[in-house]
Length: 107
Image 1 (cartoon, rainbow, N blue to C red):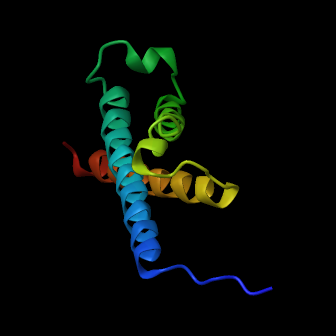
Image 2 (cartoon, rainbow, N blue to C red):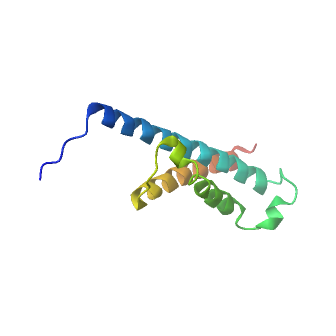
């Protein structure tokens, strides 16, 4: 059972694909953090009334869910549970940091 090692080009393609997916997740996490801040701080009239205590969480869940149709365009056609955990964590992490910074900055 000898399996061939991936070529240098295949390794490079996999790396570039991983960077694209990570960057996309991070950008959506930052956008979700800004949107959560805007919705919960009254920047958008009536937005906090729709989900009084869960507005930020709803934005986060939406940011993770919206990635599914776009990932094939980034070259990631098959996603394992591990891949989804990574995408979800990266989006959560940047969402949390962005929202926290904006809430504590007194902007």
